[in-house]
Length: 268
Image: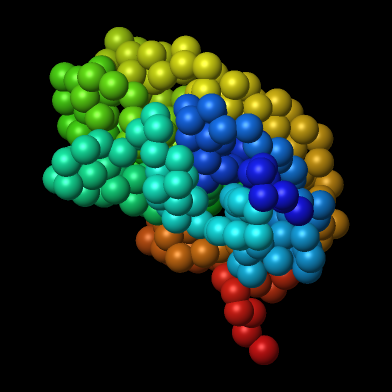
């Protein structure tokens, strides 16, 4: 897919993981091509994506003959191969802190945002169950925002005075909460941080792509879900959120209707 002189990203505009990589590529001024794999989200074989990521997930990056999946591994690869400008902080303690922030955002926080989409966009729940799940999303989002506010402290950025690795990782996740209407309180340090990073060209363009992507999805999701055109992946942290938050019936119904899937390899 990619020649030795170009980067190719298997992408989706709404994916928080893929947004993280696009922001990093743009911060490093690295030209790249991108494409949403045809049939992404259907759970069906996608040869072009499968050759880069056996899990059928985005993002996956091709750099010449090298194919890499998992957003954390991709981000670290970009830092190692294209170190200027650097996104990672210099000191080992600061790097460890950035990775911890990334891990929380990629697992616990991503699952909360994802679950809201499952309930509202994909209409997995109605009535009392829907209200219960949304209340859980709101409550747990508040906890995440409080924790991130503590990590930010009085600094302009999570890396201190300059935009860096942790900011790249937090931006798409917090922005999704803002999009849903559950973002940081107006005038709070985290809200001011979000406004600040949203003006960076790399972040601004990526957020614009996300917004356009949601418009396209809105016209296709309901029909695709009802007809079985989507099999959403209930991986690790996402499944945990559903179970602990009272959504076990959503999972069981999805299994019954074959509208959810679990990670590779599939059970025989």
